[in-house]
Length: 156
Image (cartoon, rainbow, N blue to C red; front, top):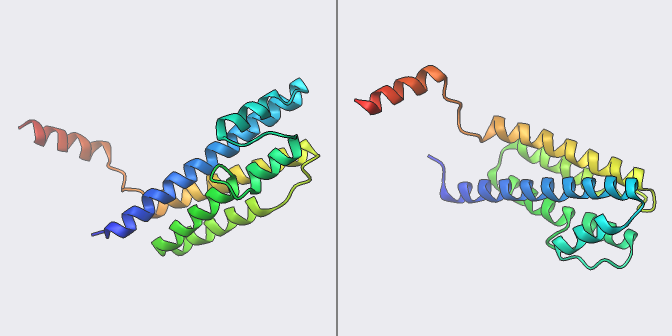
């Protein structure tokens, strides 16, 4: 039996992983569009959607990546790690720490290609963490045979 406190931590772990992934992928999309259009509009739109004031590009990138606001990647990843640590699963804590380290790296915010590479590294670390979550805490997979037998049993 799983304790309610562990379920709570697992729930919030998942929510923060989703948030880190969503913010990072949205940032990547906005950066690629910015690069193609040579317009800050995609970054401004993303800032508006996240409730971040946009004054200049580098300032926005600093806040979204490393700011002390709830819509920053670093804020979400630190909360994610806290919940991972509360579950007490070594592999999960290790991958969470790797993700935090990936996020904490500081790219040159004036070099868009470097920021894109940084965001891609964060997405790769999120994907690795997702695999560990699936292996360590996801419910077991039910085979098709078992599922069909359960369905037949329920019909009787």
